[in-house]
Image 1 (tube, rainbow, N blue to C red):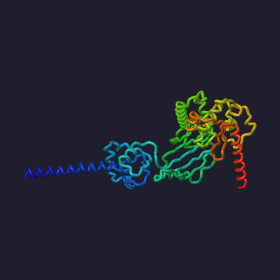
Image 2: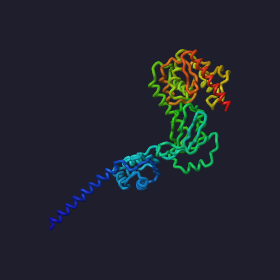
Image 3: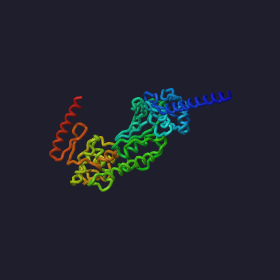
Image 4: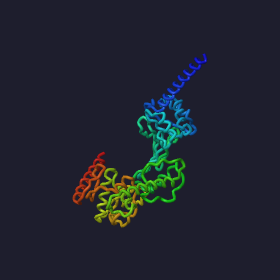
Length: 389
């Protein structure tokens, strides 16, 4: 009898072990297989949240099949105590393993709403935007110019309603250092004063995630470090035989290229014109440098250049001086810096607007004069059309 009992017990234990092993294998497979989520979602993890709360949220939104397996898998991989707060974009089909890795690795928030302060060439906007998980595109909800305009009614309340995950400052290519500093002074999210206007050209036009209370000097330091890195890399990979003695001269050329064209694909061509002029000992004769000399980089001119300004003898009047002006005339972006240090190989010496937003290039003065005549006709027609309206 005892032999039968023992045999039955061992059989039962074997069955139980087989069932447990099968359940463990199934759970492991569930943890790593494609998840049930069919449309991207935004998962918010607040400070103090637990894996129990997060797993319940994911289960209720159809992102995981089992909260228990989700939590057990996190504990098994020693990530159960490493939950990081933030907003996470969960992609369709994400496995539990991938989601656990995402919410325990942390990093910049990839979902939710952002306050974006865009500093343009002559103006700035503070915009509230929200990511649509389904499309991966941001929808702009409200915006205004905090320097020129009063805060619109309801803007602050709307910001408070939303789940703000990032505060971002975006610099446009071609803004001057003076304008950038004035814009940053008007952004109350930052703190502290700016002692000195940064050197022209030293701030990298790109996107910066900022923290509440971060000092303006700290942010400016990040912008300067980024521009230094961009310039150093471009200088190290520059074409041979360029007429620049230093990286700073190349930065000055890049700023001129940046101000001369808004068409990204034209930058290397525009750079080639000015490089060819320098190599031939011709004056650069570019209006943006003259405008900078008139305004000192403080705001836009708001009118055409006068003949007296084109004849004035000052360091930024490239109709009068030889070579480059003494400093950059704006903060150029990476593409303009790379164009200045790797220009197209052309024989162009002239260019003028062609009416399409781009420019017509020429190798001879005769060709250039013909292009100018065409542009004058376009200008006249545009003026006529505007008058008719």
